[in-house]
Image 1: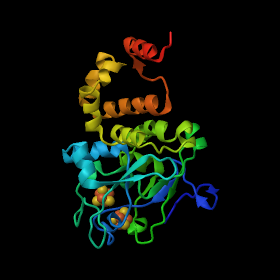
Image 2 (image 1 turned 180 degrees about the vertical axis):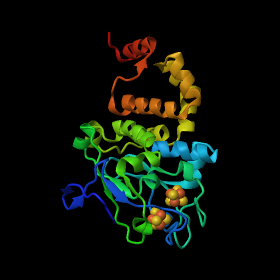
Image 3 (image 1 turned 90 degrees about the vertical axis):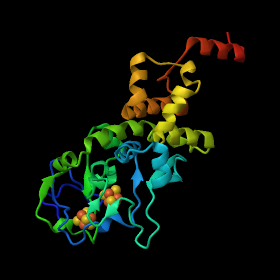
Length: 268
Ligand code: SF4
Ligand code: SF4
């Protein structure tokens, strides 16, 4: 690992700020080319799944079935989705070939940001500050290459800002203090989270083909957008989770539905 401008040491870790430089390059010429695409756990974000399923031109159901495994977070009880590695000796990524990554333009966030690793905490995030460290991967020869760039340049070059923007929305759910305090064990809630965050094509059918639209008031512009735009649908899905999982009033229930509910419960 080579850092040309070591920043503050924090708990024994060298922390880089956006303007700090590091030395790294990955290219077909390195002896270790594709070595890192094996025997690795890659967790996928909701936005990763949008990019991957659209890049492969398949539905979210097909993508999840063919390429992922689901785990339940021991801490939060929320479902996590990871890429399913091939069942071969190397546990290689299903998208790696000797020529490199076959889905490179839509590769997951964690493949993009490597060799950097976010070192943000809730406090630094609140202040809008970003900190990173450089991962220590002994077999990776990219640290011996000539290229030197700043953290900010790397983030931009790897197309990471849109991933960060979408992750900030996702964290409204995953980092919500109310959820952090109570581990989710209810299977229906876990399923609701899974569909809204990862299985977006199914979530779209749920919105348009169930009684969903009889219950909530949605303006025409939102409806049009979520019909065809996966990113807009994911933003809406996160709102639905804020409403359903956290009890935030971010969606408007139709007055007649509220009135019927009140009558049912005997509330004036
Ligand atoms: S191990 Fe490092 S240099 Fe080698 S292919 Fe992976 S990222 Fe590139
Ligand atoms: S998605 Fe691409 S870059 Fe990431 S591990 Fe698989 S082959 Fe490598």
